[in-house]
Length: 427
Image (cartoon, rainbow, N blue to C red; front, side):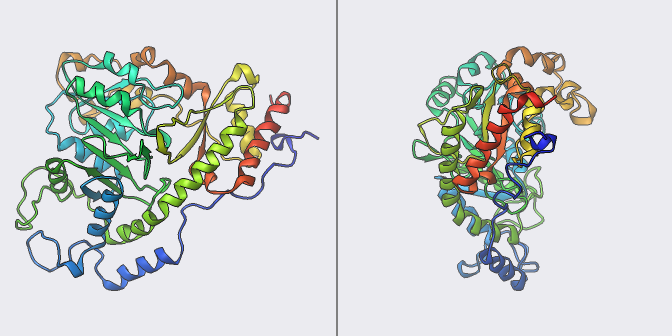
């Protein structure tokens, strides 16, 4: 009989990794308190027609969470909303861009990083990633800047903040704000300063897989009062604090966070520092062991990153050195009980949305000849690292794997070793 579980052998691991989400009686009590209060919405129904905070002793869960999360992330302002996609959209809308303005965005990221730009009638311009971190490559940004560029969006991919030492001076040189997609970066730090506080704004997600979660939710943090006030209005359908409820000042959304979500997230925030510490400890342990295998290269943990969230643990897989395709390697790992994946199937510019330019009303919305003629498929030539990551190189492990102990990390290592040693059994 084969040794590999894929071929009928016994798997390395039969039990699950650490559960996610993590919750206990604290979340239960917080939710029950909101439920029993019957104040499920930030402003009690029927309290009046003016948009204003209740008295100090009656402050809502959402208001408290906004302050607590923003302060934890070195920001003066926080505006909580229904999801992280919404907070990205609001942040860009608050910039008051003109139709056809461009924003630079990494090629290796979730679709919302780019669609939040399109939703504001602006144009995403994709730039390749650093092969050692899978973050936006600072050395590739300047070549993508044009007279139409209005901002640089960075994504702290997998929980590792970008190289601000290079990106911030470059942005200042060209007079461009930095926008932080921090959906993976709860509590993460660059040189002791929290992600989300470096740019014009930082947008965080609380979707089910994220390192803090209430199932859904998002928040935008900023140290810019004008941006914060604009986002607060946009989140409330264009209302304005202190003005009548049915008075609207701008085109906005109904992206409000519920009291129950905020109550859960306040407890989740209390867990964050300890969980990040456990993830980082286990990630460094895992990397130290995996790097010994020829063809396995964990992504670099930049020493200037003083807190890495490891929302995704990633390593680079070299098919030539291992003599086994990445897809078969992942398939064999899964059979051994290891929840690995290859991540994105293709860089974002190759998704049908961009290849076919099916945007607003079924076509490219922006009007200029340059943008109507743009070929997103052509970005493949400019983004070889993203191409390789998607096609054959990247291997992902979800963050909950890192919430276990060293024995769990050893199971991952044992499975990798078992698969590589028995690769000839895989067709």
